[in-house]
Image (cartoon, rainbow, N blue to C red; front, side):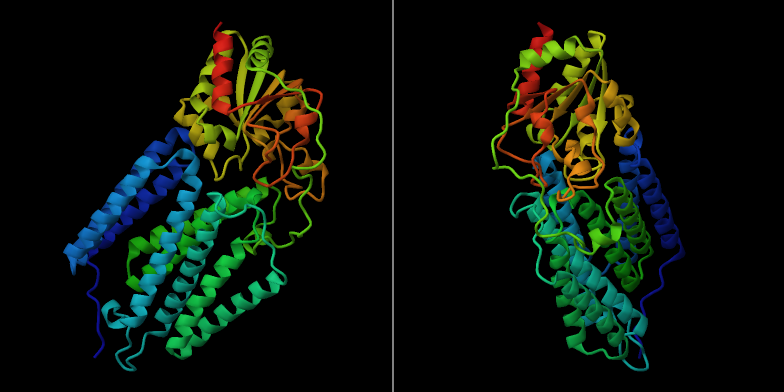
Length: 473
């Protein structure tokens, strides 16, 4: 006899719909810094409605579920309290891996105990063919998300080199594995053999690893949004298996929004969307442009007092924040510096590159945390034309996104990526910890050695604080 899961009550479906609407409003709110806080609130309320509704409709094992929520919530709260803003990208990658692993575990549970999920055909005693497709896709996407996110986490946290690791014949291997996964899922519809299910899972874990390993640091922000998309589609596939409307809606929203964001970022970086999701397709092992450690070049060094004098006597200053600002947590001192310059009658603007930092919007979040007015923050396409008229370009910890090699050096891993034209300003003040390091893409920046550039070699926060003191006196 077919095991049937009780139909979801109409009131529960209505609440799931309300949760879905709140998720849509959340995404809309997150599209702008001004409305992002309200967007987060919509998302939290929507998730609370979805979770509580599910617990009421499916009260089986409620004590264990509540205990699991309490444990997971406590861990999440603890991490949120301790995590630094600079570690947020790898935290996001880590969370994506957990979403992928959850999809894999749910799929495995459904395969091993299909009666409990109501996906068994009463006549044949086998899993419904449609449910097998859902299980195969959900487990495959979840496994890719898990292993790919683990590699992204290792790269972003510095536990693995950010440089591309290019394996011989990687595209042939990836295409072969992908074809094998698709073929096995198709075969799984006609044959419910255990070896097919577990093989799909193993192959998906392997291809997730192989897809992310060859992607370099310059493209890592795209990888973050791409993995976010994968986690959404994995959740949506499992939503069909669990017959949960909220999961289907939420997964589809996350999957589609992540894919759109990945495409927008690829376009902003002049990258091929297909090439990035295919695992750095087209990258060459000898590409890399100018690396650190070559012949020493002459550069002009300056002090905080020099920088304060130059900016105090300027008419316009454009500030370009980067990952170095995030590492040193210099955003509050930077805002104070901007306030002092405005009191002197200087025009102050902030220029944000789409991929500055390690994840989309990283710099925007940091500046918002320091209460920098939103109307002073501009995206690359809105401000790039102003550098030629600017008196000072103040670069704080940004390297790859200001590197002219992206426009001139075809061997560079960042070639073709739109960059901020800081070298066109009358004076470039460039804060960098030392001349020994290079950006995340591993490329030296020729702006360091230009005649109109003054290098301010120090910890970013300390340097800005000293500039603030000089301006105040």
